[in-house]
Image (cartoon, rainbow, N blue to C red; front, side, top):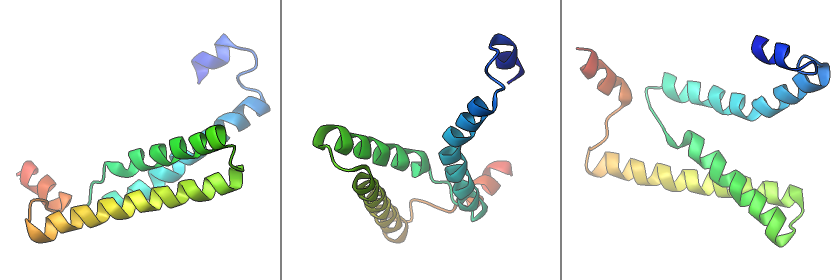
Length: 113
């Protein structure tokens, strides 16, 4: 941040800092949710992919079909939930049927020993 402050005279203005804060809010919310996932002993790499897929879907709906933005947001959230439910159902099926996956706390404790 210090580097950019010296490179541009407008970097430390309140408008720019507000813009940076707004743009980093989504990442912060996802990171906060990921903390709880990691605390429960699970590692889920789909956390970053699902919001990305939902965002692409929303953008395509707004641009290509001229869908109203609030409706596109609702559809994007629905698509994200659907993808997540499918992934959870698939991975839970693997865990219960084949026992291929184990909680990451066991994996980490095995690798530490």
